[in-house]
Length: 177
Image (cartoon, rainbow, N blue to C red; front, side, top):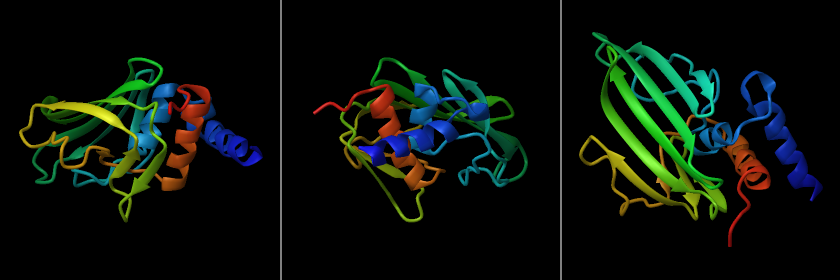
């Protein structure tokens, strides 16, 4: 039991904005997408602008830089909202010159998530036991039959994500059989 408690304490001490205890939304943002202040999103933009955390609850992270072509300013935005103790919505948006051109939203039931697995290098994540639904304004972005437990992108460290999942189940959403 000591090992689990020390893992939980390690994530809790490092997790929140300005060193504060992480909110449920910040915890989910980390173990689902690896989102935290100053993380580098290697996804979409030509420039690797570090993420900025704008809000803790809901947890909102953005990164702004030139688009892949270099002719417009693009913002990548992630919003994680708590809908219930174990139910969260994550939304990914791409904006060019303040106009949203892509949006993907997942509603996730996280009470049964027992383990995480990552591709190599970790760019996407699978949450064993995840139940999700999704919606999008872009055709083909929301296929629940192909990879029902997968979510992407993931920008963090796998070990810290596993710590965040343990912390989440310990503090906010007890693991359900």
